Length: 256
Image (cartoon, rainbow, N blue to C red; front, side, top):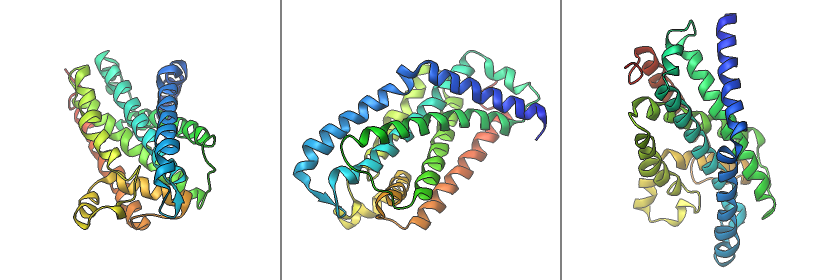
């Protein structure tokens, strides 16, 4: 890696991290408040009536899902807002004519979104300690899953931002795609409770594999094969990564 490329990546990452910390009341605080409400309502109030799920009390069962949901929305939201803002303000054009390679530009933005996703995930995990005890089955599965998932949705946010033409466009995917996928991705329930047909339908939801792999890292239980889940998550990283690189390479939606 050349010194120019390294300086470019580090500058982009520093810019993104500084922005996230500077407006922490918009980037870090809202997910903490939202997830606290989920813990209170679903964990304490509803969970006490549900009892156990998957052999664990309901609060312990949903904690990994809620942490992953916060990571997904934060990673996606950070990328789509940051990159579309740069595109709207014509900053992207300066990057495209700079000596930085396209993969370095993408790496810088993804790293910033990964930072926000991991920060939010850590905050939500700390909050969960006020409601239940957390056990860890495999720390490496936890770390690898949360990093890969954050990268997947950062890349998804990049693609959304590249094709968006106005600020309203960046809300379409989170509202009509991201929210249904996360709520139906096994965050609040085990798909073993569903009829056979709906279990099979659930298997086309990529979030299901991410949530269950993450839950396996904590509790050691999963509705799906963890090896298969890793393969699917890595495939999404590679596919979305290539699409994002190609968008930058061709300037699709970026050059006016």
